[in-house]
Amino acid sequence: MAFRHRRAAALVVLCLFAAFQAKAQQEPPYFVTYSSVMEEPGNLEIENQNLTAAPKEAQTFFAPTVEFEYGATAWWTTEVYVQGQATQSDSSVFTGFRWENRFRPLPRDYWINPVIYIEYEDVNGADKSYLEITGNSSAADLAIPNAVLRQYIVRSFEGKLILSSNVRGWNFSENFITEKELNHPMPWEFGYAVAASRPLSLRGSERACTFCRQNFSAGAELFGGLGTRYGFGLSHTEQYAAPTLAFNTPGGFTYRFSPEFGLNDNSATVLWRFGMSYEVSQFRDWFRRSR
Amino acid sequence: MKGRILTVAALIAASAFCFAAADGSWLKKVPQADRERVNPFAGQPGAAAAGENLFRNNCAKCHGAEAQGKGSRPSLRSERLAAATDGEIAWIIKNGQMYKSMPSWGGLPEPQRWQIVTYLRSLNPPVRPEERVAAQEAPK
Image 1: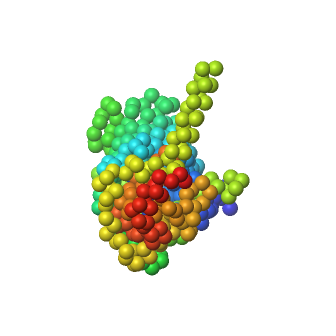
Image 2: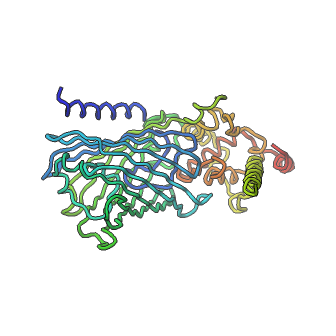
């Protein structure tokens, strides 16, 4: 087996491993937008989300991300991402890691609930995960070979202001994103993500069931770049709109799916995203003497 | 030296705060309007059954499958809960106690939160008004 195939196989095994782990909580069905829902204290959520696309002027690629999300307290959630990608007729590469922390500063549930998000990224230019979009970018960059892209290492700080509201069963979330590369003299970059969603049923079913309407939620996301400090706006940015669907099984697994449609010439025509997650309840208790 | 004294004082204050919160002091934070809210599903066995399913999916991981409590997480079969109004229970589910490890469940649709209240009420039948006052004042 060629080395590149072994690495592709390793990526697939990593994804399958994550799939058999998997989550529970009734979180909104978003991939890019964050809501005010935090990980429950002591719980560990393991998630595998994947993105694949076949851009017109570039090779088909597959970009998996594995996330480990831990509820340190009710107001602090910390998360580590490990990611890679495989491009057809090119190679499979590990693209880096991210460490994010989310803080919910207000002690109660309000009409608008703010969350402060800070993240450190250490990724290379071959990253095709589209976990967020900031600054100026173009899907045409997807055609550049991995060997070239991976030479460009980015160590950056990212901050987000997350605002989230729950009104009559609907969730509305807005994220304002800013990013600064720490190892290159690049300007501050900006981006956004907004989303809305609702469970298919607001009431719980009287019988224990897997395919009850309450276990499904649907929504839509809109996200993209907003340029840089010196060129704020939508020009030369990627913009996407995406319907999203999530299925929370009572056993703790959650499955999510979203086709993301490019809205301008800089964007890919469509990105396909799907993910699976599982919540390990009270993971913290594993390390306590009296369980 | 001064720094150590301040650190110890801060720890004692934090401990006192934790004990105060653990004895049900959250009840005093509930606004009157929320306290008096009426459960739209009160007394409906179907809602209690639905609430039990929701409890098992969302709450049991911390409070135990039978709401008996788990480790340091409190039992939800208690005199205090029997003494609380439906509105007070709905308030704590929605808002949580962020600094006491109880997360906010405001993301759960309101009808589902009331169904959980109905289930918890079925485990904790309401006490008479005079018993309610005594239970709220009793140390836990």
